[in-house]
Image 1 (cartoon, helix red, strand yellow):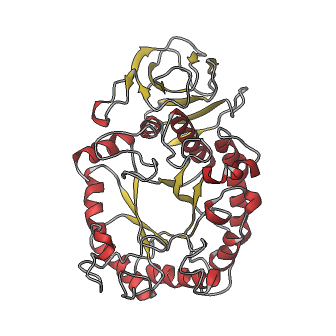
Image 2 (cartoon, one colour; image 1 turned 90 degrees about the horizontal axis):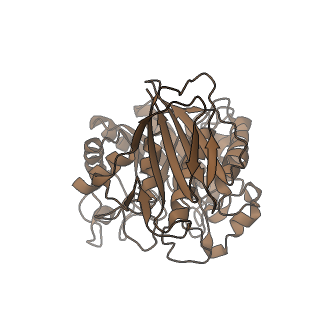
Length: 433
């Protein structure tokens, strides 16, 4: 990654890079370099994690998520060291380089065809998690270790609570601080993945009884309370919830390419808002920097993809979420609010309908009249079409990360400002400081 990526991630306010190392797809060893037994490049030629850390610091990204590999799978016919001793060596190496990192143990151990699917299953993974987590804590007591990194609540990364596979229950029963064995309190946070399934004709949305614009509200009202309930059964701590892979696609069933569109922008931003409002600790978009075969990435080698502007928009929000009540149906118009330490307040409005809406804002404990007002906007290049593939951000069509237009600026005079939100659009209103 170079100057373009650095600039793009800075402008998007990225706070964490995830460096996969676990099974099933990336049978990697974060300490190994050189060649495999079949003379292929170790870790598929990926750069050392320390190189990613160097880049992250240059891009203003303060932390990494690193995966240990709890399997013996490794390049060629070689055998990866899956011991806790090796996991501890990774943590010691991380500390020696001054890397700010959190850890995951493995990757999607629940999916069909995975290593654990034919090597002991759920109980074998949990035993390996405990071994790795205890070893990491042994050399870095303050380290945060997350699991079980499962592919959704249900199989194959599905999210509906009605399809719960039972993995989180089984995992936390042995790793939460109410456990009685060696895994007691070994987990520091719960991580899992969330994907939609257009190849299933969106039967996952149907199971949740929602449509393509209903996921964010379903998440905050159903999924998060459900997961919190599972955590509370096995742990007295308010364990962080981490979504270490997510992508929502373009909302078109059975479309294999999933080419991004304005729906992708609006729903991605709505999901980010729902994650923040419901208390998700962090999420990692799949993926940040790639080029195929499916259109899931934020940026390519030289341009931004539509969802990139969702992240830019959220970067304008504050780090303290505020309670919001709304008379509008959140399926149609979503509203999120935050504040910053400088006293400014940010309001995000997302119109997910094909008609314009006037939104009247009222505040409790904040007087917007007389405050400076900046407004960041985005919508489809083809007005009123959420299938449009080009995005107009602050008046410019598909601008590059290094050429993002400035917001409109004015002085707000109204105690209850009214903003007219065009169809299929978002606006971030920044009042103050």
